[in-house]
Each structure stands twice: as structure tokens, then as C-alpha cells.
Length: 159
Image (tube, rainbow, N blue to C red; front, top):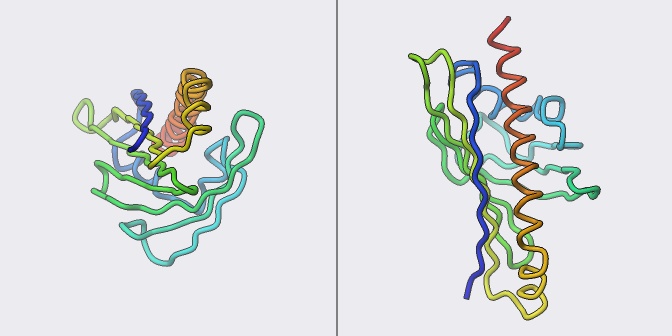
């Protein structure tokens, strides 16, 4: 049995898909650009691609959490999917870019899901009790992430 929760948000970015992609995949500058990331260490070598991995610490909802994140699917300048695991929960994040106005702007969407395989009774109770609040807090965090990416991409495109 699996229990999955999903949240999706999107926004327009006044920058080209190439610039937005550069911001998303520039792990070396992520800590500077993403306000919720407090530490990031790349653990693989080479360009951003399937198999790229990093250890990231985020501060959300008053707490810090560190995860190892791995790129599991990648279509440059269009889509990237990452995965992190914690015990019996799999976290997936999908970022999709759609060119707007002949590439002068980008529709950027992010979909986050958390799926727990064989949740125990306590996990099921916790999901029912805090599930709706957790989804609202996750949506807020995703909107912040998109705003941070947009600000960085728009600043780069303005240069």
C-alpha cells in the first residue's frame, strides 16, 4: 500500500527558457539564489544530467532538513525530475519549462510529491491529521522556490 500527496504550482518568468534552465541547473549558485537552501554540496562530477547528485539542507517551517537529491530524468531546457528518499518515503520534484512569446518568457511549473510505501498506523494518522496543513505549507514553499528562480533568471536576462 502507498500513500502519496502531490502539490503543483506554476508562474510566468520574464526570462528565456535557456536562462531559467541555467538557474535551475547551476547547483554551485543554488545556495545564493534559493532562500530556503542553507547548504548545498554537489556529490557527483560533470554537468547536470541523470545521475547528478547533491546533499542539500533546507530551512522550512522553522526546521532544517538535509536530503540527498538525485536527478532521475532530464530533458534539457524542458524538464527535470529529482528524487530524494527518507526511510520509506520518496520525494519527487518535477520542474517543467514552456517557452512563451517566442522564447522571451517562460512558464515554469513545479510538481512535488511525497509517497510513503506501506505507511504504519502512526504515519497514516499523522498524514490525516496534518495532511491539509502540510500541503498548504508545501505549496507556500514551492511558490517561494519559483519566485527565487524567477528573480535570479530575470536578473541574469536583464544583464
